[in-house]
Image (cartoon, rainbow, N blue to C red):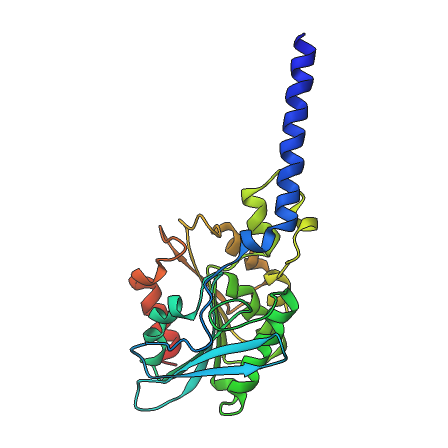
Length: 269
């Protein structure tokens, strides 16, 4: 009788494991990405001066960007900002003044399915759209006036872009080693490296980034753990830097003077 109970429980556990694996494989986009879509005629009501740009790439894909104008008397460059995995540009616009007050424009894109951008999200499309944003920036700015900035999900996209395009500096806020490393932390029982459609290997791209790299990461980050940045250290150049924010979590680094002071220093150069 006891043996039958054990076998019954093992079957239940195996069934749950298989069901969870199937859900992860087929529903991973819903698990990984949390966009908020907007109607095509939506009007952004940002307090900062800005220009709304939509580019129809084909019948299904429309890339939406917002170009935030510098509030300084002199425009000295542009920041290509790649945001995280939730909501849309509206959620991240609160960070814009930290850049525009130093004479930088900020060009921020929404990924496929985010905001007013349309199309099916794929890893390659993330890289292609980032490249398009860079092309737009290069029409008015030289590479030494372009800063590539990534936050959370956007760090791997930013690193990939900086690995193939020249820029003044690459700045990564709460980066991950690669996508599987993040998911593995939450689901250690699954072979997530083989199950995910997205790899985004930040560690790989950092190896071919020639521009200076600055990383911001908090030790209290439970979404993308601080150990991800520690694992990236072997791939940084001698003058690259990891700024450790003690106690900082995933979305509050800009409440720390250490973060703001360092960013001010970088943008004033």
